Image (cartoon, rainbow, N blue to C red):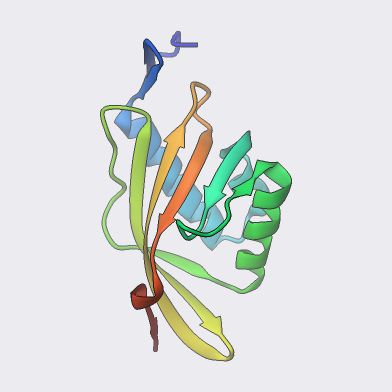
Length: 139
């Protein structure tokens, strides 16, 4: 803990190298777009929490998170990064993207920003997806 060159611990705050977090977020997008659930789940800590969208009940733990992503991947959703991943001076980073999917036979696009935090092992511990009804559009 804290011995990794890309991770520092200052009191209770984990400070991770921004480039490491950005790389992990790009891997998240790549794994999702390839439908690689195993690779996607390897990015998450065992007790991770996913809130997608923020305001809905979170999915907590590996089983709930895996079920959530399995449903998303079965629907054929694809992620299109709109800007490069963004880091921070702490252990949080974000990605802003468009989700391209289908709902009731209609193509849809949802504009989303995900904010993720990482533990000292470089695993995602929280993922919050910021989007609402006005961020969805039928194509």
